[in-house]
Amino acid sequence: MEVHHHPDLDRENISEDAQARALAKSLYQETYADSLNMQYRLSLRNIKENQMDYFRKYVMDSDLINLSVRFYPSFFWTSVVSSAIQFVPNDGILNQLRNSGSLRYFKNIDVQRAISRMNVVILNLRTRNSQEDAFVEDFSRPFIQKYYDFDWEDELSQHGKISGLQGIFQSPTFHGAQMPRIRNVKEFDRDNAEALATNFLMLIRVTVLLDYNPYIEANHQLMEALRKEFDLKK
Image (cartoon, rainbow, N blue to C red; front, side, top):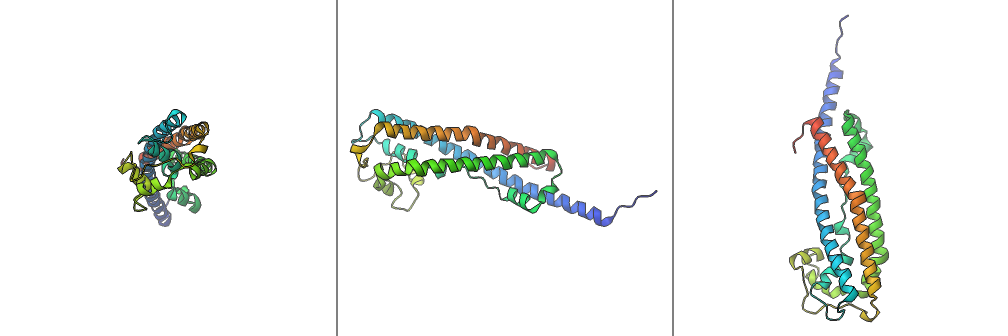
């Protein structure tokens, strides 16, 4: 018995294949861009960790009146730089796939699993970012409100012309026209300051171990699966 292929069904299959390839390319580009963004955020975290180490050691036994040239940059990195070090995924295409039902275009099981894994690690990562935000609001903000010299940062940012982060990269040991000071220095508790910095340091290190590293692995697996299934180039 002769079997006839329905031309409309053939055209539908071709259309779905084309849509799958287009979506795969967009998803790959989004995932690749995020992989670069993650590496940048990790580099900022590394700088922050080093500066936090300096701050912790300094506040325990060094002069709190005649401050070293490295103190305020370390104070800035330790207590002010927070959202800049966070990796926030751009998952627009993933959301589109999930909400529009377009995931059905991806027939390959490895691609499906990689997408599912990426969705899970992104959810976990956002939860962890929220925990870091809560620490900053509950502990770091009150601390700098009491002790931080905002005039120093105002000069660092050229009175709002650039961001503080841009300023510190341009001048890593910035001091400004006036020597910075610890406000309310007589009430400055060395042990409390060291404990606060240490707690924050441990928090951001655990974030990398428990959430950033799994994201990096899921990101790699997704790109690899997309390259293999749709013959995409690195």
